[in-house]
Each structure stands twice: as C-alpha cells, then as structure tokens.
Image (tube, rainbow, N blue to C red; front, side, top):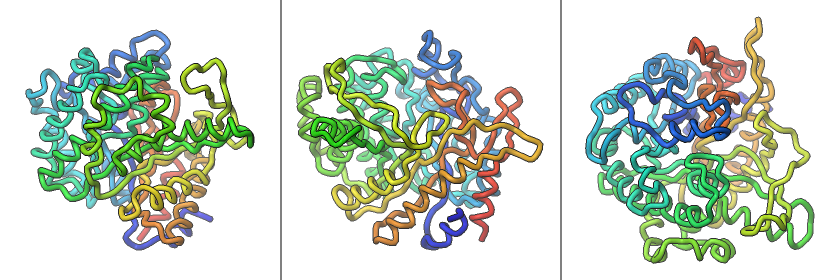
Length: 443
C-alpha cells in the first residue's frame, strides 16, 4: 500500500511529524554554545568516522527558518526537536546563555507561526563536557543537574511546548556508550555502565517531576527498541534473546511503568548498580502522559562464550538491510506497540517518535530517487495501521529524519533525511521520499 492509502486508514487526529536532534543539525560552534562530550569524543582516533564532529552540522542555527518552511510545506503538523544543554548552560549550571535562549525562542515561535506543534526532548546525548569531566552519567549529581536544567527549560519555554520528554533513548546513553563504547564517552566498563543504566533513569524521573511541578500536562518518555530474535530454537539462544531484550528494552519499560528492574537483567547488572538504587524507583516511575517508541531494526542473537558478562552476540540476519546494515523488520514495531499497550502502559497513548532508514542517496538530474526509504515507511506504517485497527491507542508518527545530518559515530557518512544536505554548501534538496510524504499528507 502507498503512503497515501495508509494515511487514509488512520484517524483524522493522528499526528504526523518529523524529528531531529540539536547536536546533529544545529552547529555547536555557533551562538556561544559550550562544548559537549561529543565534541571531544569525535577527536579520539577511530571513534568517529573521519573524526568529524557537529561543529557546523546542518547549520540549522542560521537556517532554521528554511528548515521549518520545509516541514510546513511537507504537510507535517508536528516537529520533534531537542534542546542543547551546552547551548543553554555552556559554562556553569546556573549561567544561562542569552544567545541560546534567543535561538530557541525564535525556533519555537517559528513553529507556532507555521502551525507546527513543538514536541521537545530535553536531552539527545549532547552532555556538557564540564559535566562529563566529573563523571557524566556515572555521577549521581548529573541527574540532579539535569533536573535544574529542566527547570530552566520549563521556565523559558514550557508553556509553548505541545509535549516534553526528558531523555532520548536511555539505552544508548547508558549501555551503548558505557559498556559497548560506541558513543560518547566511549567506555567499555561494566562498572560505569551499571551506574549509568540507573542514573539516566533517575534523571528521567527527576526531570519529569520538575516538568509536572511547572504544570505541564503532556510529559512522556522516548525509548528505543530493537526486536531481538534467537538465531535458532535452542533454549540457550531463546534465553539470550530474552536477556538482550531485557537490557535493551524491558530495563527501561519496567522501571518507568512498574518501579522495578527485570530480574533476569538484575542477575547480570545488580553488582554494578549504585548503592541504594532501590530507593530511587518511585522517582523513576513518576506518572507520565504518553510513551514514545523509536524503532529501526531487529537483532539476531547467538551465544558467545567470549562475552563474559552477557554471553551473547548479535549476528547478521537474512533480511534486506539499510545503509547502516540494519535489517528491515517492520513486524518488530508492531510487537513493541502491542507489548507496551498490554504489559506496561495500557492507559497511555503511544507515539512512534522515530522511524526511518539510512540510504545511499545520490543526486541525479531527475531528483533523489530513494525508493527504498519510501518502501520502508510504507511497511512500518502498515504495521501501525493494523495495531490501531486492533484497538491500540497509537496517536502519532515522527519520521527520522527531516535532514541528512551528523550521524554520531558515523559522522556525515550515513543519510537518514527526507531532505538531502550538501555539507559543503548547506544546500537542501528534497528527496523523492519528501515529495511522497507531501503528496500523501495533502488535505
């Protein structure tokens, strides 16, 4: 089915938007922005493709009006963006950068003037370097500094934000970055990972409480998911796939919605959690108004005797793959939507807060024919349409991403955007996928 026919099946009040993040598009060298740990991580040899950083990125700091026009002209009614903590508090935990306030004031007002609903994420991985120097997410104080930062955001912008979410993809912040070492700060240390897995959840809960104290009524969480399947039907492969799902997904679902961590993951991680972690669970489970799902791919899980902690590894599967070498597995999206509605958040609306694919796009005389990306969106929206028909309250979908951008450890080598960006000239060129959305969303 086409995007247009799928959208026609969805409720009239269903939200369609696009998503970005601050460090990936803004340009951290502009507007007196402070340094983040991604600026320093990018300089570590072999940590980031080409040692590229987000200093210029998409120059959204100067080109935000053009980018908002593209959102509006594409027919999207919502924009999920993130605030930059180093941009707003570059030097100290109290010293607010007026240039940062001005930028986000203009950006939010620009959305509202164009009829675009602002959906804000407070933290999308750009931790101030000054806090990273003190231990970052392994330091409990960072969670409390994050609550203070939330207060700044709510005081200056809260009344104009349609929805808010404290943390984007806590698994990436904690496990991917502190145990697997792929993202800043690039640690491969279970002691650090254990602390980060809890402290990022505490930060979420404290931030949600601050947002609620300011009277906001649309607070959620944004959890990334990876559909874990065993390599075969052996008991060990099945157990390890469940453990992988526990570390990746259930750790965050159960702590937020049940004030507990899953037992199978605790067997692995408990010795490395901060002392007294049990006392924080009520804060972590602060009531929310919605839940967000970021979904891209699946993981095929196999035993690995060389992996001393978890005993597992991911292996290549047999499904079609994106330019990230991620398998296209739309059935995983519906699995998580159904599980959330059944087991964790039966009374909350669900939003797909990120979904999309990297493609090896190239400019041609006839445009940018990213047919695979259009098919990806269609296959995943078909899953959304089915779960809604089955009575699950999915209320919106945000395509990742508006722009080709800084793709973290992959630098500028991978392109997820509906809009092609020439990183030398900053010229924006809509891809065929953008035009497909534009046509499908015509009112």
